[in-house]
Image 1: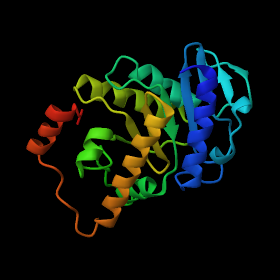
Image 2: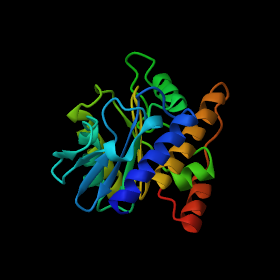
Image 3: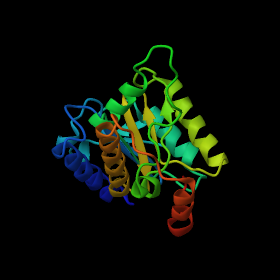
Length: 228
């Protein structure tokens, strides 16, 4: 994707996410990997009111070249681009939100003191969750912008890829998901599927549904190339 198209697409996707309640206030950020660096939404910017010319541009070393001041999460985004580059799910775009249903899942999972949350946020509830998103590691809490969170995410990407289960999303405990795909539109679609699955899980929590069986998941692998 060329830079002009990427700027326009970041703004279009940001407005769509804001208008439909996936992000609020100045929460969330979007970045795109370019041939000569990165574009990312500015710090404290509303995704509903982005201006193409004001997006932050950084070089390949993460130094800002133009635009408003880059979001501090560029450190995490760059680690995702680097860690996923040689996996079957390389990132061309990363989207981070504080989506309500996903954060609620995380809060439920971390609500009991002394109990370690599950390594993954959600079970294999629906075929489209398995096909379009896949496994979602639940990364322990770190403050926003912490380099420790970036390291934990990079390690998770490497571990899942080595096990033959490449991922395209992680959940930062108490904060929100980071989802990546080849383009802003594809990353947004994966985020939508993930948030919808979280909604189903939250609504069914009183009587948790059985996940798809291993045979059903294997059929999805064989038919659609799912990485679960």
